[in-house]
Amino acid sequence: MKRIFLIHGWGGSPEEGWTPWLKGKLEKRGFEVYVPAMSDSKHPRMDAWLANLRETVRVPDQNCYFVGHSLGCITILRYLETLEENQKVGGAVLVAGFSDINITVGPDENVLEIQSFFQTNVDFAAIRKHCDKFVAIHSDNDPYVDLRYADIFRENLGAKVLVEKHKGHFSGDDGIMELPSALENTLQLASD
Image 1 (tube, rainbow, N blue to C red):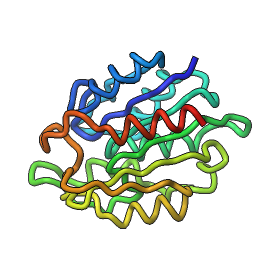
Image 2 (spheres, one colour):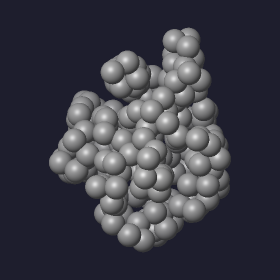
Image 3 (cartoon, rainbow, N blue to C red):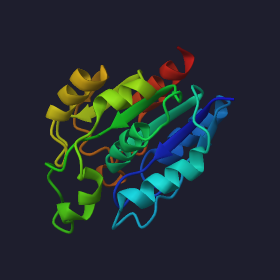
């Protein structure tokens, strides 16, 4: 059975934005879909988020696929860095993802809140040993995540990159309650 893990972002929840829609669409196609509520999402800590993801996935294999939004993307990448030598997963879709702390934050947020995710540089080589299929979905008007991350993911992960028009940060606050590109690309990854 193919399993898909949807990982929300900073301040998010399993009920936020397009996540419930994507979960429903994937379940209708016969996937087991998990949407963990990440620990203390307004004050995220990498160790807690990784523990939460490890507990949810349990034994990773090539029938595991991941879809992350924003901080959920770096959580997935950090998780992949920690897998054992012989463990591989099927693929990952990164929506509004980033790989360093040089992002813009909203007026009620402090970028230092997510500093624990960036104590070391992302080890893209280690990640590629455990996953070789990536899709990066970005918006041309994301107020937080610069389009340079699309290039970073293309260059370092071999990611297929999609840049959508006027989707902001792909959040419920941006009115994004459905995300067909995430569905289509998750299905494509899972069928390859």
